[in-house]
Length: 340
Ligand code: UD2
Image 1 (cartoon, protein in one colour):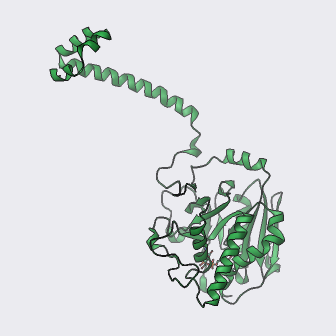
Image 2: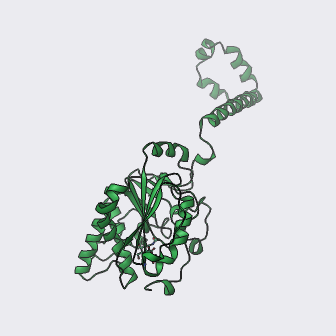
């Protein structure tokens, strides 16, 4: 070791610490430094092993392993929900104490009634298991709503509504119907609402981790895209307009929710925006989904669900970061099913 390094520490300090002899021993032979470093490294190894053991005792089990492969927070600090970011047991303790009831709205109008059976059967297996659930089935074909055995505390409530000639109108009028039925049913009957597409099925746990004041779901086609490439409505004449360069995420029209109050406000605002568009002879590029995106751009959701909560495996495969697929598209033949 070069003497200049030794001269860096004042000799007085060595002596004060009673390390004068050690200093001398070291300065005699540079290889001795190597030994000191090796001994220190060994000590550090033992220490860190002990520390890791201690950490293992205090950190939660495998279900809660840190995710470093995906974004976990929005820029306004709302959680983005992925597998590994929540502990089911802790959340169940919190929500079961509050005795919550969850309403699930789904629309099965015209031929879309064919999707009800699989949707409800899989929901009974995976959706809010152990909780009170009201399935609100909006349909023009009440006789075709299948009878599915339900767990205790869960029921299907059929709401008869009109149909529309165009599938786009059916999709868009969901906003109107949800807001209209809020006062007749939802405010009195449930705490939270989940509003979902029917041409889907559940394939893994989907529980109270989604519940929050207002939540939206990342669209599976855009979860990694830059805002400039989102398929927002770009025409300033539409109420759904979001200028290029603005926006946070692209949310899917097929799964959103929150407290009844928040969902009521959101669906009412989207419906009113669509009425203005209609008066101005413009229809947003992705219908209700465009208006949902505008609303969630202006009113930031308090929780964002990752694409685990809405996925299309046939279209997008199964990337490694998706540890779970909870709610997935059922293949459908558009020509056979739409406008029928
Ligand atoms: C996407 C969105 C959808 C909506 C739509 C707007 C997802 C998964 N889906 O779906 O929520 O925003 O774009 O363009 O994000 N329906 C009927 N009968 C019909 C037609 C539709 O009941 O004849 C209902 C049904 O609940 C269906 C929903 O409306 O799930 C949306 O229609 P879609 O699934 O055909 O629209 P899609 O796949 O373009």
